[in-house]
Image (cartoon, rainbow, N blue to C red):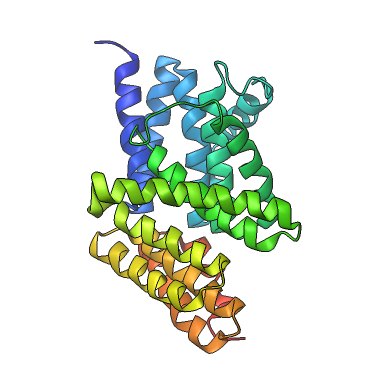
Length: 279
């Protein structure tokens, strides 16, 4: 057969399993098989696309140090050897994927400066990156880049820049609402609810945000996206904490801890322990 097809197939399965919330141990096992195949077939494009997601999955589990040195070197070399100014040419797909992984990792681990830097890179590439929204993992990219945009928009002090970030978040939310209405509530409803909740938080509509966080959590649970159920609970926890309701935030952080642990993201879950006593 065609040598690159098995690599593409296992890569697609591994990536979609990761973003859909399949157990991380299973995801990492699948990714290792993909990396093995890409090295055997010398498919460097798939290799460099897979490595950032593989490293992030390991970090979520607290096993980043177990990443083979050869893969660490390949990850560094892929970035260093790629023309960072070529964001609309042959390297656009790579940078779109790389910045997306970085902004999502920064969002999940609450690393604001890294989220800002990665999001700037992501949206600079996104301007010239034309793919159908339903193509491969573009839905997840819109979801997480929208959440990152709302977070950044709330945190930065410059009102003009904040407005730009909030506009980006709203655009991502609008796309998710369209998908929910026209394509599949099962896949998109919970994502739309969480983006709506974050938007209402930004608009200081706290009553509306409360209902939407709970709707996002419920929809994630019903539709079996454990990773997004964990994230929705965590963001609800931060919402209550930042609006002066520490005691109420503990419930949501506790649920987030439980769901991240269920997913296999033990290291991420452990970052929430400081919030669990309400202090």
